[in-house]
Image 1 (cartoon, rainbow, N blue to C red):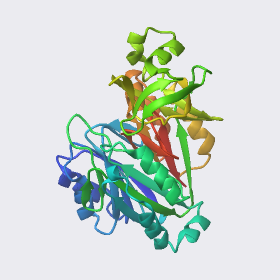
Image 2: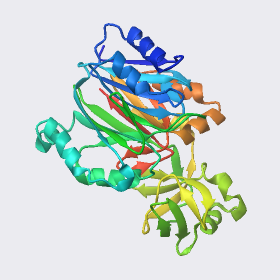
Image 3: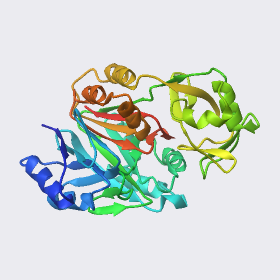
Image 4: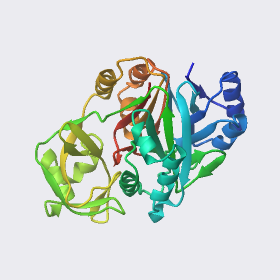
Length: 365
């Protein structure tokens, strides 16, 4: 078997890693990708000690998915052997809040595979994973710079936390705050990427962002008017009630059939903060959230017309909370139980930029 997926609850990280080692006995993973509840201390180091010959990358998480299961306080692991991943190159970018130049690191990663031309000539098999520690809140700028440093597609998500524990990302035996983990996978049989946001246009009225602060992810004006006033006008509700609609009526950058979601967070300092920033000059529509299970099934069935080796689901925490509130967890997880799969509840997703209230899904053939 080229990929195995397991969910483990341990008394601590060492116990978790021992269980993983026993469960995967006889399997030789080239890569362990894991999502660990933030209650675990140094899970990456424990896994690296248990699997010294494997690359190990991961993120802290609020809650975890594995096959048909949804849990909290666990570790979801995808182990990939040479039958699914021919090679992997991992690098860590620290201090991402200081806007580092990504080009030297990407050149180094390209050179690992024989240069940028060699990577791009094998584009159908090479894909990037990016895991952000969410604290610096600079994913928008980072993804923009990543797009100028490489033409390779990177997908992933931002770390989250349970009720206790620290937001972290992991590579090898180290944990990182304020950093991004980059990995380029050279798959054996190729990959697919899809996203579903379960969001639809609520109003055809286009709103122009005329005042915003990308650094603080704060929106102040639509069409030279206070954004909260305009948002309430579009929804037809009193302005004092708008915070009740932030999740069910997010904003969206609409490009043809594609929608890239941005969700309001809280009213603050004369504006409204966002989970993903919107630059001035952007046109948006107000959206409405549909049926997450139905929309996710449609998206999966349109793309996955074969039996994949494994599926990784970077699922926004807001979507997790929505399926919990609507008692849809079992039916949602059943969709991913059709494949070897893992996932976690993210603080934002990476797919041609930084988005949220979306599921970005990597399918390894």
